Length: 262
Ligand SMILES: NC(=O)c1ccc[n+]([C@@H]2O[C@H](COP(=O)([O-])OP(=O)(O)OC[C@H]3O[C@@H](n4cnc5c(N)ncnc54)[C@H](OP(=O)(O)O)[C@@H]3O)[C@@H](O)[C@H]2O)c1
Image (tube, rainbow, N blue to C red; front, side, top):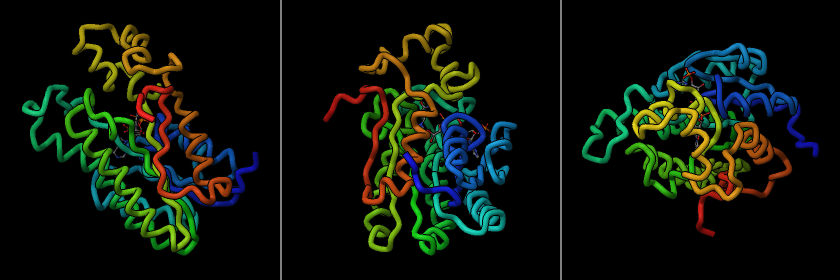
């Protein structure tokens, strides 16, 4: 299927590894010139992206700098993928509400919500000019908060709502905004022993390997497996493309059937 996006430009945040890297690679394979922004610029990102920006996206200045440098590098922005998110495993409490202080709430909201607000605000004039599209990477946790670190589901719920608000405002002006909500994805967030996966395994008394093996069942997937980053990336590429020209303001779940509501 020709997605009809060759020659377009994109900014992908959190593009160094995991889902963001897969999105960068999928878009590049379709002929999109991608500016990949991440804290760490990996060799894989260097290879796939037209330009990279090393940046802390949890700050307003960082988010604005990405857009400025992207426009300088590729001339303007057709597509924005607000992918950066998650939580810093070293600063994260896995306890309940009373174990999680303001610092955690603030850090999680800065990375999962405000980064998207700041990046979108900076990129929007260019996206409006080009009648482009935005995809925000939320999570099924936005709908089923139990189990996720305190603050994460709440920030993702706000991000999903932000997509809808933006879509309502921007669709009449020719810009499409959609959300992609993955369930557990086999990205470095889970597979890295030093990431959240490793930390959760230690907290539950399982080896990291055991936790990964049990995750599909623990999450209630119907397919019996986790989603691969490349599968999320294909969905994002489709949503940005001409093939999705009348898809506006929708939340697209990709979770192997883990979510049990219709
Ligand atoms: N994996 C899942 O199961 C899952 C499920 C639902 C939703 N999601 C969402 O999908 C998105 C991507 O997750 P992922 O699993 O691909 O994560 P990941 O494997 O941990 O990769 C995160 C990427 O973002 C970068 N990053 C993190 N904090 C940053 C910051 N402050 N400034 C700039 N870059 C930063 C990381 O750079 P470094 O290498 O420097 O850390 C890395 O390149 C997130 O929004 C997450 O909430 C993930």
